[in-house]
Length: 257
Image (cartoon, rainbow, N blue to C red):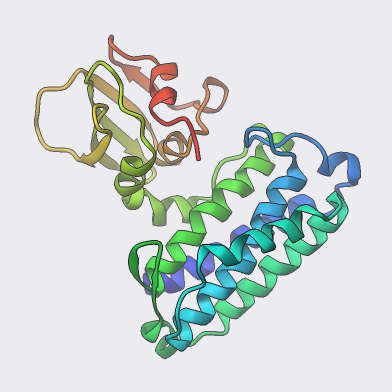
């Protein structure tokens, strides 16, 4: 199965998961704080809904060969979502994301192969486009799931697709430390070996080099670390053997997106 097809499958599972989580929540439940800083569950759903709408416009451009929508089109979409009640946000977000995923599922191999989009300073094929949507949906689904079930984790199929894209993300969102530190990072499920360098911030394939310690954790935990969602209460398998750094220091490198 192609990366694009696997990503559509992962998006379907994530959509079904968040739909199941939200079904049955009343207004009080939707107003409950999510894991995402300063956002209620309803506000997370608002973000997912508005982004489904925006990604639908991007999909139109990618399939037609037209120009991608510019950022000036986004604020009216966000404003329209911000005006809705929590109950409306829940229903409309699930519907918008369901519609987007169904559109993806209806694409055949020829359409996926032909999809091309110039957006966000990148040239994107189908896989590249879909892998922009997957982390947002999977991570924000976890933001909701974990406040309802503290043992929740990001879906494994999403983790498998995203783990090898983390070096690029880490370079975009990482905050350099005053003291340069290099950690050897070992993950499980799936197994990977990286070097995390904190002056600049770089996460790159491991090669033998001097280092200041070893960070061992699951790939799912590393994904959440880079996205600013790894605290001591949700890091069961993490082991940090590095005298210059603590988990709080690592969290400061990745404050969240």
